[in-house]
Image (cartoon, rainbow, N blue to C red; front, side):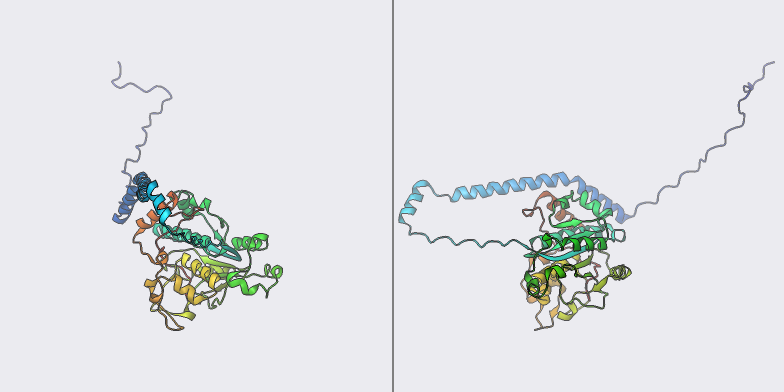
Length: 380
C-alpha cells in the first residue's frame, strides 16, 4: 500500500534546516536635525554649482559689453576730434605710472603645521582652508616675502583642496605642500636657504648685510615654533631662520597643543610680542593668516607696533602702549576687516577663487573676507 507521504530518497538529509535569524535588523539611529540641515544645505550648494558658474560668465560678459559701449559713446567723431586738435594747446607729457616693484625674496621661511586635521570639524577645516589661501596670497604679493611651506598636508584638508577647490593650489608659486611634518619642512627650508634661491638681505634684514657673513649665517639659522604658551617673547625675525605656525582652528578645545607638540620635539618656542606693544580689553586669538601677515609687515618695516595696527582687525579693539593710539584710529583696511557671516560665504569665496574671480596674474586669489580666527595659539 502506498504511503500518503513519500519517503525521501536514500542519502538525502531529512533534518530540517534551522530557521534563519528573522529578527528585524536594527535600523540606524535617526539623523539629528542639525546634521540633516547641513546635509541638505551642502546638497543644495552642489546642485547650484553649474548655475553659479554660468551666472558669473553672464555677468562678466555684460560687464565687458558695458565697458565697450561706454568707450564708444565717449569717442569723439573725426571732425570734432580734428577741430579740438587745431584749437587745443599743446598737452603736457603724461606723467609716467610708477613702476610696481617686484617682490623681494628674503632668506627666511614660514612653515604652517597642518598636523591637526583629525581634531577639526568640517566648518573649522573650511576656515583653515581659507586661511591657507589668504596666507599664500599675502606672501605672494608682499614687497618682502618669505619661503612658504605647508607641512603635514593630507587628510580631509587636502581632500577639500583637491575637490571643492579643484586643485587650485597646484598653480601656486613659491609655496611647497609637504606630507612630512614641520621638522621635515624646516630641514628642507634650511637646505633651500643655502642655495642661490635663498633670497637677499633687504627690508628689515638690511641691517644684517654688513654685520653677518652670508655663508656662516646660512648654516646657523634657528627654528622657532610660535605659540602663546611659550615663556619666551619673539623680539625680531632673523635671516636664514624658520618660523612654525600652528595651522589649527578648534575654538580653543585643544589648549596648549602647539606648545606640547614643539616641546615633545625639542624645538624652541616663542610668542609674538603683542603684549609688549598693546593693551587689549580681553584675550583673543589670531587666525593663521593674521600671524603670517604680521610677520610679513615686520619684514617690510621692522616695526612690530605698525605691523599689529595694520593687521589686527579693528573690531578687536586694542590700544598701543606707546602713545596710547587706538587701533580704531588707524586707516581702515577692508582687505583685513570686511566681515562675512556663515560657512556658505566662505564656500562662495573659495569657489570664486577656483573660477577666476579676483585672481591675480599667477592665479592667487585675494579673498575679500577675513578668515575666522578661532583657536589658533599665537597670543601672549
